Each structure stands twice: as C-alpha cells, then as structure tokens.
Image (cartoon, rainbow, N blue to C red):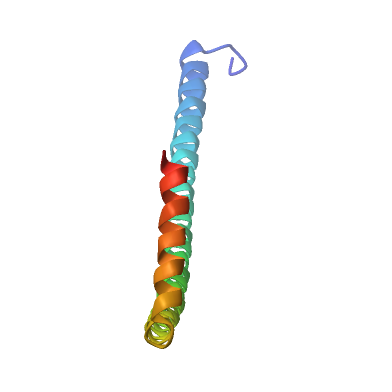
Amino acid sequence: MSDEFDPADHAQTAHDSLEAGKSHALQAAEELRTAATQKAQQLRDAALDRTQRLKSVATERAEQFREVAGERWDETRTQIDDLKIEGERYVRENPAKAVLIALGVGFVIGRIIR
C-alpha cells in the first residue's frame, strides 16, 4: 500500500517547503538590504554633490558681494573726501558766511535738543 498516508513524508515535505521559503525570504531580504544600501549611497552622493555646488555658488556670490561692497566703499570715501575738500574751500573763500551758518546750525540743534 503505497497510497497510504505517511506522516513522516508529509512532515518532511512541509519541512522542505518551509526551508525553501525561509531561504527565499532570506535571499529577498539580502537583495532588499543591498538595494537599500545602494540607494542610500546614491542619495548621499547626490546630497554631497548638491552641497558642494551650493557651497561653490555661495562662495562665488560672497566674493562678488565683497568686491561690489569694496568698490562702493571706495566710491563713498572718495565722495566724502571731495565734500570735505569742497567744504574747506568754501570756508576759506567765505569765512564770515561759514561762521554765521555754523552759528545758525548750532542754534537750531540746541533748540531741538532742549
């Protein structure tokens, strides 16, 4: 009677199926772990690349700003020097008028402060 139910055969078949499923699950988990690791590395690389590009752009913009600010500062200093020279020339040419203007300005400022 070979058609008889043999619990040992069924148990072995179930055990073999379970082992095959376990092996397949472990292989799938390993493949998933590998894919996740690769994706994480790709994301890190992309983030690093983007960070480096942003740093480069920021450095370039900061340098441009520094140059423009330096040029504006030089222009402002030149204008202040020109105003000083012009003021000194005006006072030399019109000393009485300059003293009266200074007294008037001082009087107005004194009134505002009180």
